[in-house]
Length: 576
Image (cartoon, rainbow, N blue to C red; front, side):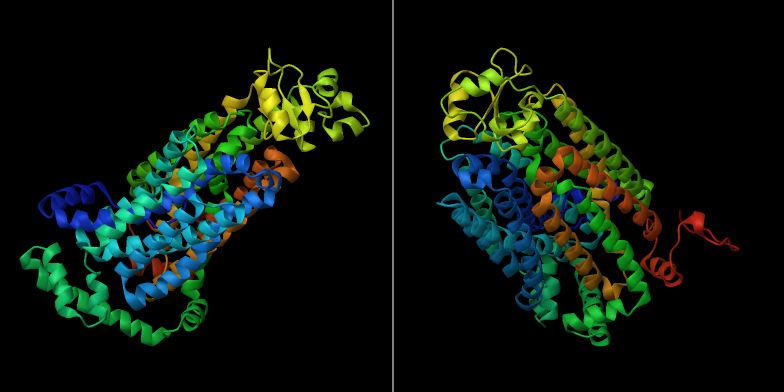
C-alpha cells in the first residue's frame, strides 16, 4: 500500500469476522459503505498515471513542460495534506459521517471538473478537489469503520479499507486500459471516479453516525441504539460501559495535555518517550516514500516507456502488473507481520528494494548506452525542415544515438525494418510524429528501443514484491503501536504529515530528476536514500510484535538501541 492506515488482523480474527458479519450483515454494510472511501482514495491516486499520457497528447504545453506534468500529479498530494488537516477538525466537530459525505462531494466535483477541463489549469483545480477528498477519506474511513465495528473483529474490518485502497489503484489501471481507444480517453479515466462517490454518498445517507462520536456529544441513547444493531443484546450494556470509560479517559487526557493542536504538539515533543516514538514513526514513514514507491504508482506507464515501450496502451498494460502485485503484497503482509515481526519485515523489504533499484539502474544505463544510432541521411532527408535543430548544430553528430536525440528534446523515428537499427532524429512536432507513424514506424520521445525493456519491467515487478509486504504496510502498523495512548493521535498525525510531505517532494521532483540525471541516475539516487533509510530503521525502530502498549512505552523510556550495540546486562532479553 502507498498511504493510509492498516490495522493488523490475524487468521482467527478474519474467521471470527466472517462468522459475525454472516450473523449480522449490518456490520458489513457499515464497513463496506465507509470502505468506498478507500476505493476512491486508491482510484484517484492511481488513475493519473495512465491519464497523464493522453493529457500530454492533447495539450502540447503539458508535453513540453516537465514541471506542469509534476504539478498535475502532485497537486492531489498537496490537497490531501490540507484535506487530512481539516478532516481531523471536521471529524471532531461535525462527526465521521458528515466528513465522509463531504469527501464524496469533493471527489465528485473534482472528477467532473477534470472530465470537462478545457485547459491544464482546470485539471489542476480538479486534482486539488480530489486531493482534499483523498486526505479526508484517508483518515475518516478507517476511523468510522473502527468505531462502528465490534472490538473482536475490528482489525479485520479496518484491514478491508487497506485492501480497498490497493484494489482501487488496480481498478484505476484496468479502467485506464479500457478507455485507451475511447473518444476522450483521459476524460473518461478521470471522470469515472464520480460514480463510486455518488454510490457512497447515497449509501452513507442511510447509515448512522459513529457511536463513539455520538457518546462524546452526550447523545447516549442514539449511541445505544447503534450498538444494539452491532452487538448481541447481552453485550450491549458492557460495550456501553466500555465506551463510557474510554471517552472519559480520552477527555481526561485532553485536559492533561491540552486541547489545542499547538499544546498537543508541544506536549508530545517535550516528552522523551514520545520523541523516541517519533524517531521511529517518522523514520519509517519518510523511508516509505523516499523508496520511490509513488514514482511507480503515479508515473508507472512513463517508467515503462523509459524502458523502451513507446505505445501508451502497452505501457499501461505492463503497468497493470505492478499495481496487481502491490495489491497482492498487501494481503501477503497481513499473513507475515505477526509471524516474523515488524522490524525484520521492514529490514528484509529494504534490502530487496535497494537491490532491485541498483540492478534496475544498471539495466536502464545499459539500455541508454546501447540505444540505436542516428542515421544521418534519414535525419536530414526525412522531410523539409524536419531534422532536430540540436543535431544539425552538434559538433560531432556521428556520435549521436537515440538517447542523445531525446536529451536534446527531439523525437526518434525508429527504423521501419528493425527498430534497433539506426533511425532518424527529428524535431519534436505533432506533424512529424504522425508522418513517422504513417510509414509504419515507431515514434519514441520518452525512452529508446531496447532489448533490455522486459528485464527492466520484471525488475519493477520485483521491486513491488519487495516493497509491498514490508515497507508498504508495516510503517502504518508501527505508528499505531509506538506511541503512549494519550499521545497516539498527535504522534500518528505528525508521522502521517511527514509521509504526505515526503510523498509531495518525491512526486513533484521525479520527472525533473529524470531529466537531469536520466532514469538510471534517478533510481540509483533512490537506492542511495534507501540505504540511509535502512540504517535509520536499524538504529531507531524497535520490534513491537506481541508487546503490550505498556511494554513498548517502558522500552522507549530507557531508549532503544539495536542488540549489537547494547551494553549487556543481566536479564536483557530485548529485541534485535
